[in-house]
Amino acid sequence: MYGKAIELYLENGTADGLVTAELYNWNGKAIKIPRTEVSDCNRDDIKGVGVYFLICKEKDGADSVYIGEAEDVHKRLLDHLYGYEKGSEEYYWVTAVVFIGQSLNKALIRYLEYRLVEITKECGRSRCLTKNTFKNTVITEAQKASMEEFIDNVRILMNTLGYKILERVPQATDETVYLFCKNKSGALAKGFVSAGGFTVLKGSIISNKIVNSFKQFTNYYNLRISLIEDGTIKDNVFTKDYEFSAPSAASCVVLGAPSNGRDEWKTEENKKLKEL
Image 1: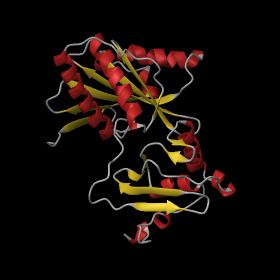
Image 2: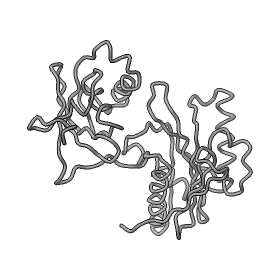
Image 3: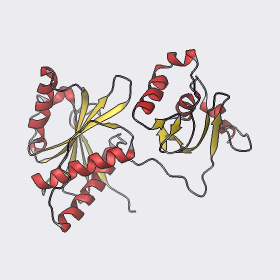
């Protein structure tokens, strides 16, 4: 892997407004635009052919995303705004991240949409709200290779802009120190500290009950519920590796109780995380 040079441009001088991100020596571009600025945006680049992510938040606090494609992305974003106002769209998004490219056409953006939805579901970091994609889009072998490289750049820029939607859950290495979290209610989980927080491994078991006070910790309580609802946890067992934002987030979900992850996660030698 080589280093990457990325140019960020803040249109109104703040990161909360419209931001463009470009990789050196790539003809694509990312445009992050708040929902509140879409209607009045007159930039020509956002009217190009491309794919887009609508960053949403579910009622239970879970992250979700809608991924789409359009030959005029700006017009499509306006359609989404109008659809929500009319009640034909239930989800509410706060930010759109658009990716355009000079060589893109309808067939290519359909392929990109399909692959980005597929990768998002595989990564499992956000609920994907996109229901239908064109799985069997016909493109040449060379075009497919070019679009896979485009996706690699989309992944880099999305992460740079603060969205880990396309980032796969970290994997353990030979140097990984495993930690365990358990209680008398059946919890027995295994995980490790990772770049984004704390990763709990597939097969880990959560407690079979929660304490009443846990419901007051709304974010973690809702997270536990959402992980059960989306299948990440089934029959009290993690069905796949999952990265939490912090050790305490992981321990709270596992134990079904308020907890400090730095105390609850321990090595096989019973050494606490905070001692490492």
